[in-house]
Image (cartoon, rainbow over all chains, first blue to last red; front, side, top):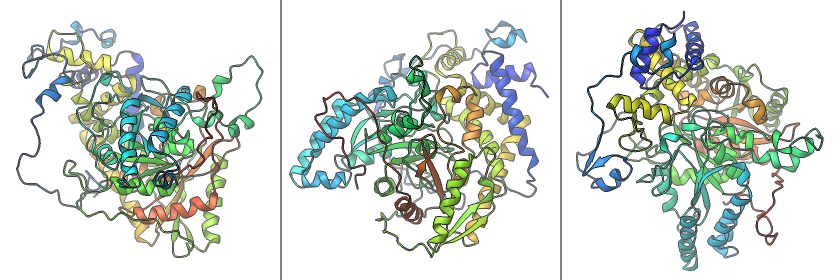
Length: 108
Length: 516
């Protein structure tokens, strides 16, 4: 089954990355087709594996500050900043809807 | 060998450094390096020289020129991951593995080229262009090439290095450094090692710190080691392995550095030959080399048996899903706010992020992010992501069963064929290529096992072919011991590079290939 435009649009919103052109969408279709081969495998009764180190305990350390005070270094790499703040454009404005957005998907 | 030379004063660290830097210049057409840190390297070499004069070198690695793949953070040196997203990014810290090497006195020559964000199997998809395999310029390859008419450009049949740590492999193979760091998520260290005729070691997951390695797949990434011989790999491993409080996925067990014994008797070993690794598309040359290798062990008295890893063919599909899912998550940090590229779009946070990522990532990266997000959608999570995790367990269990039955080491091919010409390679897209080329190396990452490529012989086209040994978790000593024995038996030929030098033939090409 082909992926619907709604889902493609949803993905562009989630990933904040665009498909750019028909090739991009085709790439996704092929990827899904490729992944469908997984369903040939019988996994009844098998637990999902998160990590190869699952048999070991995750360990904790003492809650002491061991490093920090590197504000200047960290700010050096940011393009827009004011005093000790990273500056972002206004938030709480969702990405424009499909019809109003500059996206390849508009044509579909 | 070179380390002994440094100790005895036959050559000084600064001389060594200068020779390497000059060779890097002569081999610029390989495009192996993105950034050459000439000045800092010379300073490090001078410091090293002072230590040798005082008779107090820090260790075997003191003064040894090394290169690091450009997805490791290096303080004060640009780290780009071959992407527009990080062009101009100067890291404020050293990755733990880089720090460890520097603490041992190693001289960091520069950052090597790779596929963008380590996604790919050819080192052809980075923004700085593809890396050329040094063997394209070897006498061995040229002799076997079909003679072309004078009008045809000699430049057009250079072969790829494999990937994604192609730059590191090319750097080691062309003698511009004595060891290099790569990363291995699906075979990214072993694949180029095989194509460039060098040793490529993927350590057990959890042995070496990933702190500072820009992550691709958190549950499979490991730093990889590329050297010209197995002994060197063991030395580098010794200096890098061990618990790092900054990386909670490193195990806490004490790591005991080891010296590789000179094994002469392999009769106590049981070598497994997994039949599923006779994958479709495996070249007959490699098949025959693999078979000869098995016979080599048999004739030396080792127990060689055929084994089965039934879920091998699903490993690449499983990887595809898990990798894209983790990538979708890991790439989310690139939004232009704290570091890296930032778009001029200012209307809203979301539109700025979207524009930044549109401008910063190439098709491959974007494709994986979108696929990953698809597999993680609520309606797909169970069917794809969880399913892949279950298959992962089946793959890991295959190995447990085989090793549990008495097999010590597995012997498999590393790649399906020798290196292909660049013009051939780009005919297929990145995902198809990765799916084809990672087939033999991927499963070891799934299961977190250590694996090593040992250059074995030359193909009919005069290009290197390697074989892979897969060992048991945290049994690097055993793995490297067997690999070293094998290396000694096959006596892989040294590359006869034909390169015009900048300095006019004043020095003899450094004959010693190894530093240990």
